[in-house]
Length: 92
Figure 1: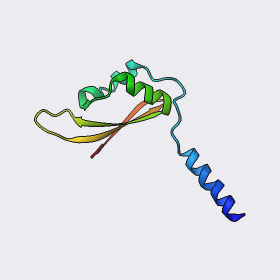
Figure 2: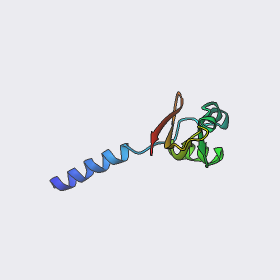
Figure 3: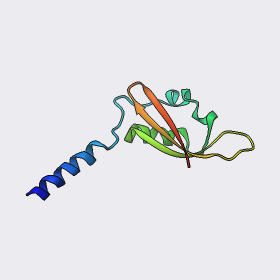
């Protein structure tokens, strides 16, 4: 019985930690206002990123910082919130 209850608690915690789609869809204009394509070299198209943001509420991309002559690989995390798109970048 205790094992069943613990399993339910763990499942509830895992399900609440999942990303949710945004309340209103992210537009291409909002994505371009973040200027991520000027800051980073990203392979994915804006349409692919919008599809991820509008389906899951977040997107994690492999990218490089846009610094001429340098190679800085990073992970770029985009999070669709009610205030707009939040961007975080992490070194790989």
